[in-house]
Structures are given as C-alpha cells and as structure tokens.
Length: 198
Image (cartoon, rainbow, N blue to C red; front, side, top):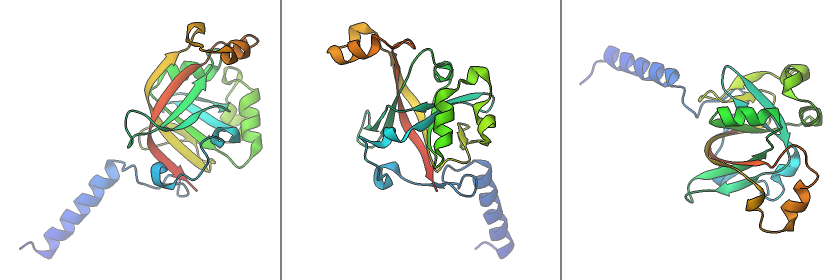
C-alpha cells in the first residue's frame, strides 16, 4: 500500500506530464473550448462556407490568412474521419503557405471587418492580422489561429491536387475559369484534428 506522500508525488508527476504534453482537450486562450465536430457541429454543410470564413496556414515561424467562400465538410477515407475541403488559387499568397505547411485552420468571426479586410488585401503587402488588431495564437499542434475567432477548426492536409482544364467534366468550371486570372484552384482535403468554439 502506497503512503500518502508517495500518492501526492505521483499525482503531482501525472499533472506535470499532462501539462507538458499539451493535451488537445485544453482550453485555448481561456475562451475557446474543444468540441466534437462529428457530434456537435450544427451548421448546414451547404451554407457553412457562405459565412466568409478565414483560412490560415503556417506554423509558429510564419503564417498568412485569407477569406474563403468555398469549401466542404464531411468525412474522407472513413466514416470516423471528419474532413474539410478548401480551395486556394495559386495567385493567392496563402497558396504558398498551404504548399509549404501540412496544417491549416479555418475560423469564423463575429466582426465582418475581418473577412472584408482579409479578402481585399494581400499578405504580400503587409501583416493583415496586425492591421486588424488580431492576436496570433497556436493550437497544441502549433497551427496558427487568431484569438478573436469564435470558431476554430484545425486540419492536417491528407491530400491535395492542382486541378487543370483536363479535370473539368462539364461547362461550369470551364466558363467560370475563363475570366478568372488567379489560376485554377488547388484542392486541399484536411482531416479535422482539433475544433474549438466560444
């Protein structure tokens, strides 16, 4: 039978290990709380991306974000593997970050000024987050997000492909891309590895 002092020491060691390992269930910035996207995500998947979400890619050394209006949510390579699909055009500065880094976050904000500014300005010309007064933070896995977000979904890119004209099966993409000078979007499918909300 263990003595009381030994039990206290073991408990202290267990708490220290939990703190040092950065458990994903931790509350981020004292306001965002983890939730299970497969059980608790209530948004309509067909309209979720019409909320003008923000996509951020990078790591603890660099990052960039942009407004996204297209995407998909569901699962990929298994019923128990929630996934997010996003599309980024090669001319966008964020595309370079998506190509260099394996993780990204999508975020929702209350303030429409965030997605308006992120959509009208390029990170090539300056720090968009700083211009908006946003504070960059990192998930337990080191993926950047902004503390002011009301929803953060973190994804690990499972696959991506650079679409080309040979991929088009009907006239919708042919017609759409005929007048789009930012290039044909690259498709990224990310496994959801973390999700937090206020």
